Image (tube, rainbow, N blue to C red; front, side, top):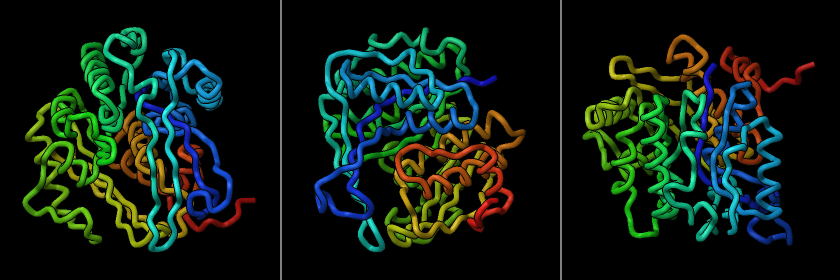
Length: 344
């Protein structure tokens, strides 16, 4: 049976209530979240053997975070504890034409201060078959970037399949390196790449001739075929490219689909029209987790892609970073049960 290890930063998430502006009322909702941890929680919900690796402070906040992950069934035995702080992100949920807003407060966090050698990758990868990380962790500090590169090299040396969600975050690359300077090296150890158009442009400097601005609303499927081919031609180690396709009509209404290219076949998923979005944060992570589950469970990549898109569609209905859905619920939506009628 597949065992998936994920690595990255998990943060304290402080969100204004409902659709309120920051401190419109004197309270913030406190939960935990972070790209790679979100993936591990989803996989645990699907019944997969999964572990999350990070560096957390030795204090009550760090302990509460570990308990939260353990409660979902995530293996936390290789989380490193040390002095320091936990990163924080503040979230204000947008509505209609007002976009959501994220403010980071993660400089100097325990994982930002980590460096190669701080994690025993041989122990962390023992018995594992798949390793997943994102482009967020290499963006937070030079030490975290070096640790990420050490991780993918160790994973490949031990025979693991490596997946990476490029996840470009312009507000994070502040320590002197640009995304392309780091990610073009790291992606040489990746088998499955997950990205959107902006990720390819900013992280890998790849742009298909037919590509348009990432701010435009309508999609041109041919350009995604071209960018996927270009990525695989540029990095022959890549086995497949999955591209998420979000058409943002407003903060509350997105059309959501994805495509996948394996060097031979190009698959395009069903499109979901998601209105009245509850929380889109973690939507990409839920797609990544769904794809990992699908590729390790179903017999074909098209079904895996459809599972990933349906899982992510459901995440838009759930508050918090974590996607709290079951395999049965995702498969039900895949089969067309999306009316939202009460189940009795």
